[in-house]
Length: 333
Image (tube, rainbow, N blue to C red; front, side, top):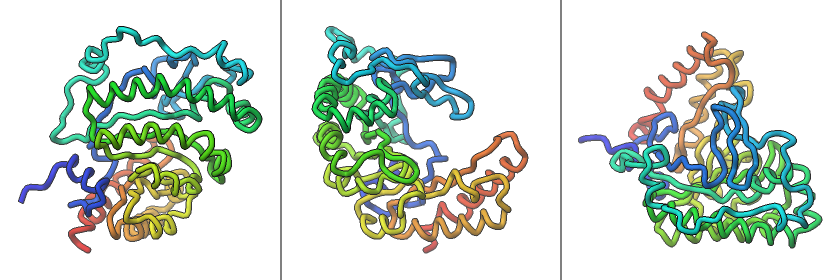
């Protein structure tokens, strides 16, 4: 019998079904729009700008992911945001032409690929305007002004999202915003519920009304917010980092939440100094812990110099382990 496509296998997972084989993000099964109507994603060729004029830069150390340029502040007082922040005027904008542009979206392989769109990075957008410390101070000292700014930004965010959904007809919506550091969230659950959840919910309701599955990108120890995610209709979380109590999360939400990740990709086990035997042992424990019951995506990886012979050898070890053991875990267990 012919194997199902990577697209259908991944969608089975997000729907709460047991996939035919264990998915991996190393196997390309998703595609999405790459326009700059929202926050820039990458900056490989020098600075790029957000729709509000924030300069983003990339570097080899972060694979040229777009980050706000340090010290580039456009808003130094949250009470003055109305004088500084202007949403782009999209009157008469040709949305259909945008999403027909091959450089933005164009034709996609809808047989083999899951089509995704996304947005909703309210906290990170505030940080891009003010810098990290000033953004947090604004949330604590002037919550009404932050709420007013988010309400204004949401007019533009949702306009873009509605048109992206209409013209790209995606399968999955990714709500993407980082709300936590390695050891703790940036703010309390109460502040999350007051200032951010209402705006995230506007996006998830729009996605659910369109019949989309919802994946949430959120780095750091963000487990404090999972109950809110469940209530918003989120069914998947990436990258599910190991600073969270992942075993307890799987036990509590395992039949409702797909965890993409669950691998310590910054610690010793993923370093070039870790012996191959220890890496192999960790891979077996990793898969045997999180694969049961489904709701898991294999994302084991390394950190270090990709040109180093040890990196090449260890990456092959991981690839071989996935192919020979992890991929067919559900058929063999």
